[in-house]
Image (cartoon, rainbow, N blue to C red):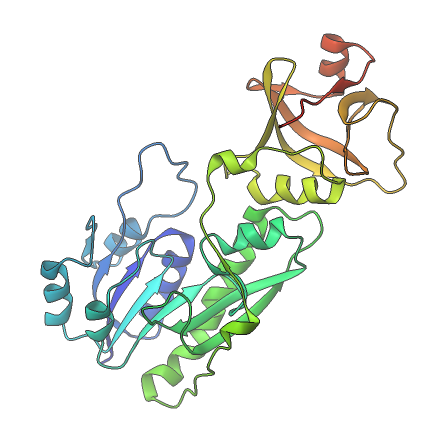
Length: 310
């Protein structure tokens, strides 16, 4: 029987763990994370899934310590798998796998190596992304590709909607690749990192809207950080405006007066300094829902200009 040690978190971790079990892989140990205080936990629990299947799950603060390396090595796994686990794994952990260590990444490698690849892809207005299973090296997301599947990004998709597609793609990629990994017939494809890109993590503060940009750019930011992520925001009239859903209406003409927010015809709009108009579909002001009627009742028919971020 093929034995694996699994490092996993989030929905991709849950689905890929289930794929291993469906293929009869013996999962000797599951390493996951404690949920971070203050984080919006909108995703499934790997620890709960492991418990449901009678698997041992642990939550080390750092899996790269000598004690944890020794424990993993003592299990003599054929494979080590990392499925949306948030820590890099040291060479000693990777080397504990007799037949290789593999990671599932949420992009079409070598594009969007690094952190939060789905959010970056949406932010940049990409029309597709996907999931890639690859061999793990010390350099992040750089190993040879064992399997890959693309998914579309529609113009109004949020990062959560794209993430759900990527989760399904990850399940399919692993399900297809696993028999070849187990019997040794799978041929890996080296990456050409020169053709790709690398991005770091994002902070909630990165969601601040720069209204000097054009409407499509701001629309992509809103989509990329919409709930369950922290959201796109800006100051407005001494309050915090958060915008959670927008669209770029065809043939909309900006009103006079520069970048700002206003109500017209029962709808809420924002003119963008870089050109174009956004229809605001869902927003809040200091936590209270804001629509066209609410805006008109509070501010009247005038355009409320956005503050210059500089």
